[in-house]
Structures are given as structure tokens and as C-alpha cells.
Length: 294
Image (cartoon, rainbow, N blue to C red; front, side, top):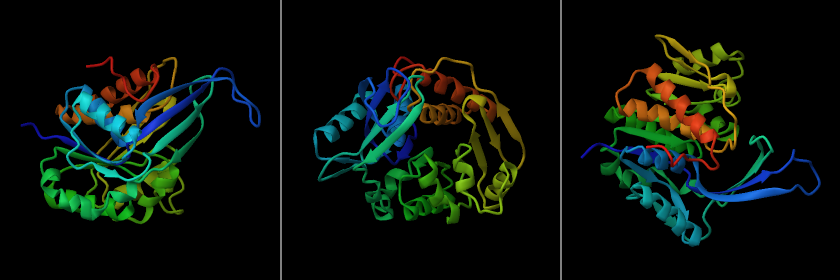
């Protein structure tokens, strides 16, 4: 049996309001609404499964109808849920307000329960984790859980990747021991949140993380592309020019493409090209996944 990618973190219901015209504050805006399965780690797990990669999702859902729907959406595409947590109460929800051009105007996160993914829960499922080809976590999980995973990765040699998600969870990484972390994937706003105030410029921030033992830093710069930094080299790749329909899940899709490349044994540059391609596809559809791709 091929070793799975194990994705650890958020599984949410994405409720997205697409404004018909430019969003105006303090007044009623005409919009269309869509409901899709979301959450960073679930999005990545779902897209990997669609692309034929074996994957396990360790996340938290409620014992409500949304939780049942999220679990069913995972099993329908082949995502395994052997270590999923089902708690009493409502499932987490991400409510996004999208401007007329598909960009995010604002968003709300409610009822998320990622604090239940504890080191104790992971230790309980250690045998499962030891089967992984790659470990991925979004920074919505607790600091002690991130540190447990970094330590587990150093001990076992299984590569571990962290997706910072946004500025508030990225701040969790500022004081953690990241020695041995394979990859972290911040954007321009998240990168300084992970570093000390002494590191003011991008290159200083990259060097600080490399000095803390991070093997690679993949910096996302939106429509300008991305750059992959390591001690040996820097690879820069521009983003394709496309018409954006919905920005939701584009970053998750980018990381999915990169992990797919790693899983297939491709070079760093090939991984970046896959990442940009998959992200561009997701930007051109509604929702956080591209089910038309195999």
C-alpha cells in the first residue's frame, strides 16, 4: 500500500457571498451565495484525493448535519478519516464576503474546534502517523500540537509542512522550535508575523527562519508569483495571467500542487509549476477545489 499524505487541521463549511457589484459598507449589497466543503487541511486532502494521492485527514467536525455532510464529502472522493474527531455541537463554518472581482472583502470563522487536535490525540494515532509519506498541518491547530509534530518529524524523518493560513495563526510560529521543519508557506503578510522585529526586510526574515532550522520557505506573492528559498538556492516563478472567479482555496490548491509534485518525485521547480497551475485552475472556478481535474 502506498504511503498516504496526512493532512491535519481545519474542516469547515464554506458559505460564500459573491457580491454582484463592488461591496459598499454599511448598506445592503446584492449577492449570490454558495455552500461548499472547506477548511485548509480538508481542501488540500480533498484535492489530493481527486488527483489520485492516498490521503488521511485528521480534523474536527460537529455531530450535526453539517458534520455528517463534511464526512460524506471526504469519503466520496476517497479521503480516509481514521483519526477524525466528532465532537458534540456545531461544525465549524467559514463565511466569506467576496467582492465583484472575486477577491476576499472580509470573512468570519465560527465554531472551529481545532484545539481538540491535541498531542495526546496524535500520540494515540502514532501508528497511523508513522505510515505517512508527508505530514501537513495548517496553523489553526495549537502551538503544542505543532511542536509535537515538528519533534515527531525530526524523530521519524517524515517531512513536515506548515501552512500559516493567515496572520493571527502565523504568529504562533514566532517563538516555536521549528528546527527540522521541511517547508513553511507564508505570504507577504504572514512571513513577518513569524519573525522577530529585528528581521525587517524579506531577505532578513527568510534568513532568520533558515537559521531556526527551517529547510525551505515558500513565499507567496499573489498575482506576482512565488519564490522558494533554501540555503542552497532561490527559485522564483511568475504567476499565470488569468481571470479570477473566486479566490477561495487558491492558496490551498497551490500547496496541493506542490505536495503532488513532491509525491511524484519531481524537482522543486517542477513542483512550483504544478502548484501555480493548480492554483490558477481553482481561481477560475467557484469553491476551494477543482473537481474537473484528475
